[in-house]
Length: 251
Ligand SMILES: Nc1ncnc2c1ncn2[C@@H]1O[C@H](COP(=O)(O)OP(=O)(O)OP(=O)(O)O)[C@@H](O)[C@H]1O
Ligand SMILES: [Mg+2]
Image 1 (cartoon, rainbow, N blue to C red):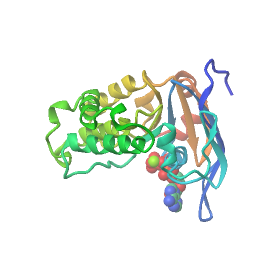
Image 2 (cartoon, helix red, strand yellow):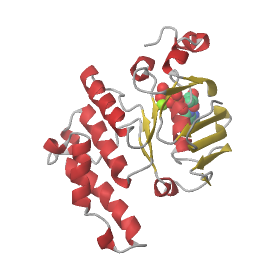
Image 3 (cartoon, rainbow, N blue to C red):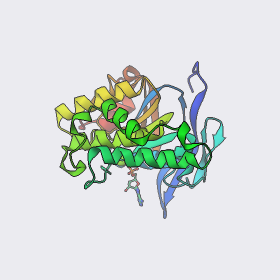
C-alpha cells in the first residue's frame, strides 16, 4: 500500500461477497484518501458494481469490513450510510420521471432537511427550494428546472441524479458508470462535472471504459474476476502488463 499524506476517509478491508455459491468479490482491500478522486475499473462482470454496492451500504459483505471516517459501518442499514456522509448515484438512471427537474432535487433536499429536523431547529437548515436551486446550477440544469425529468436527454438525467445525490452534502460521492449510455458530447460534459465535484469532496467512480478516466483520476484500482488486480496512477495502470492483457480487445 502506498503512503498517503492524508488519513483515509474510507477503508475497505478484505471484502468478499457471495451471491449464493457464486463469489462476485474475493478479499478486496483498498483505502481512499480524503479529497481524492479514484476510479475503479475492470471488464464487464469484474465485480465493480458489487464493490460499489458494498461501499454504499446497498447490502452487507459476506465478510470483511467497511470503515468510514474511523467508524465501522459493516452491516449497518442502508440509511446509515448517507447519515455518515456517503452518497451515491447508480449505474441505472433513477429519477422521478413525472416530476419536474426542480421537484426531483427538492424531494431529495426535503428528505435531508426532515432527517435533521428531529434533532435541530428547522430554521437552522436552509430551504429545500434554495438547496435545489443551487444544486441545479452546480450540474448546469437550472435552465431545464421546470421540465419533466422523464423528458430530459439521458445525459441530463444522469446529471440530475448527481444533483440529487449531492442534496445531503456528502463527504464521499460514489458514482457507478456515470457516463453509461451517453453520447461522446454528454460524456465530456459529465467528465467536466466530475472533475469539479472532486475538488470539493472525495469521489469514487466506477467505470469500465479505461480511456475515459485516464485524464481524470489520480489513482485507479483494477478489479478482474472479483479480485484486486492492480492499483496505481493512470501511467502505471496503462503500462501494467496484466491490466493490458485483461483489457485486450476492449475499448
Ligand atoms: N445480485 C446478484 N446475484 C447473482 N449474481 C450477481 C449479482 N450481482 C452481480 N452478480 C454477478 O457477480 C459478478 C460481478 O458483477 P458486477 O455487477 O459487480 O460486475 P461489474 O464489474 O459491475 O460489471 P459491468 O461492467 O457489466 O457493470 C457477475 O458475474 C454478476 O453476474
Ligand atoms: Mg457494473
